[in-house]
View (tube, rainbow, N blue to C red):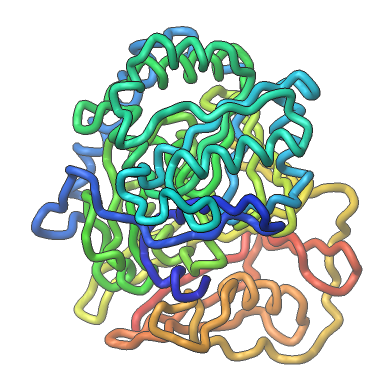
Length: 463
């Protein structure tokens, strides 16, 4: 897994594992999309007009084929990747919202490679293509109690099926949907008609089902594709901080790219990133949000879900489910600056919400689960040194969740009000400063360790 993590793509692909008790593994994605990068990175001023056009574009494609989608009554369940077969909490929530014992789940795995590109397509123990991944998830959902789960035959080998009346009928017979991992640009190719970026018949049908109360879930790339404008297409944190972002889909996996037109546009109140702490993606998320004028990012952690009720409405409301959490990066007061020394960001805020915590997107207010109590730090030990805050691909001894680890360590000590951590790379080396500024609060479940964090100030500067 660590070796595969060192690819900079936005999400990993599911792998068929019928006898495994673990989640499908991730593997390097392929650069099979038609979109390619412009010649130079873009900055906020360059993207201002593009962002406005993106918002218009998303509104157009989201509503053109399904006017009822203006006021959705359904829900999203977005998982940061690596969803374990044994996660009854998340699978159970999807099934419950799809109708409980009568749930019928449509499985979409078009982000995976098609059978024609999988050298192990004939081996059920090694295959990792859309069809075998679809069979894997169908089996898992049935074992978790769904009445039925069916693969929808959509992938790069079956692009025409996205406008098939037979597949639309299959969609209309479902009560919930699950999008698997892989490369989210394949979803653009198959369901958004590629460069046309308009709903296929199948996507329009799913959008209408969501509006009428269905649940739409996705893991890794399947969560990322729910994004609105400026959906992340790939990149690593250090290179993103050093070089900035650019619209495009790059062969260089470390380069921070985004798709201005976005994904399906199901969730538009903030950018979405996945595998956030496990892959050290907080840095790239902050840089992309700053470059593109977004003031919020939802950083989804592995094996953990962000449940979104009434997505896209003024009553959009969220709940975290799972063993890790969801990072909410708040850039409303943040200020970025470019100098000869490098890029810097001041006054961003980091909240880390955990199981049972809720969040109101309209008011920006979290509500911590009542089982957690305010943390009164008693420790006096200094915060441990952290010289790889974003889990660098170049560090063979790196440890995931370094950003979160430093933040929690600071919250748990009364010896310090601030702590620093650095990137593994230099030239420049970036320093991240965490500060318990006004508004910060931490909550615990055991009375000792920080669990949920609210509004920790984050500054990033080159040195």
